[in-house]
Amino acid sequence: MIPAKFDYVAPSTVEEALSALAERGDDAKIMAGGQSLLPVLRMRLNAPEMVIDLGRIESLRGVTEDGDALVIGALTTHSEMVTNDLVRQHALLLSKAAAEVADNQIRHRGTFGGALAHADPAGDMGAAALAMDAEYVVQGPGGSRTVAASDFFVDLFETAIGEDEILTAIRIPKKTGWGAHYEKFVRVAHQWPIVAIAATVKAEGGTISEARVGLTNMGNTALRATATEAALAGVPATEDGVRAAADQAADGTHPPSDLNGDSDYRKHLATVLTRRAVLKAAGA
Image 1 (tube, one colour):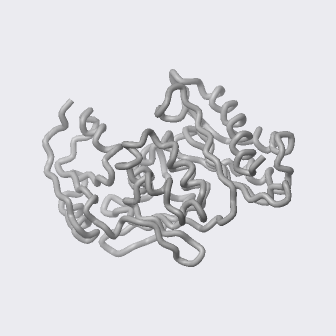
Image 2: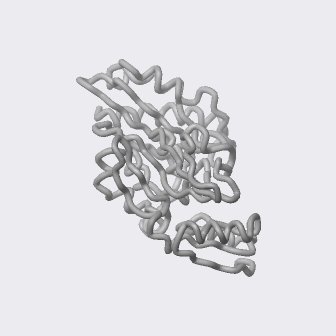
Image 3: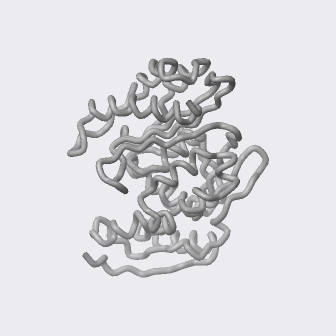
């Protein structure tokens, strides 16, 4: 299907983009890599009067260090997240999750910030960013502000980004030396995950000292398995050691029911995948 007619602008600065957004308001849509927006436009599920393409704003790209954090530009592609040395060293979980996003073509065009702003609970990057305690830098007419990981995802396809704001960067606290794994369950290759688990683990001497676990497609937003995280502290990095903690992964979740599986199936699947992901992250 062909999209409805719209105006198109490609500003070269964030300020120009914000000005265009202020001018059109609800009639405008922001485009980062376009891998989520363009299919929506083609199916006419949304028909904005203007598309604001951020692709020419070079200041929104790249990965830098800022003390104990990485600063990842919103337009940094999934492919760069996979290969970037800083990400692999200090935020390995993001690299692991990005490697599971769709296929090479989409990873080459799709962006970290665009995926997070789209806020699809079945998207691969939301749970990983949540597990990494990401902070989101958004800029609007009044300047920049930072949104905590726990406050960013509000509801299905809804974030804390204001209608007059743009996500410019994601700050990731370094977890240097932590193991990581993204365990994704699909029926066919490149499908949205039925359930996926993002786990990053600090293990010392065969014992887990800290863990962070994010849940993909287990509710209206990406979620943290906080009960599992608490239960993992101090347990041996063995299948028997992590089993009881992993069995709590679905506590408090409300996963959807669809043709790929009902809610109870997803809850059971989450416990199985959490056990696998934690053990692989711990190097067991």
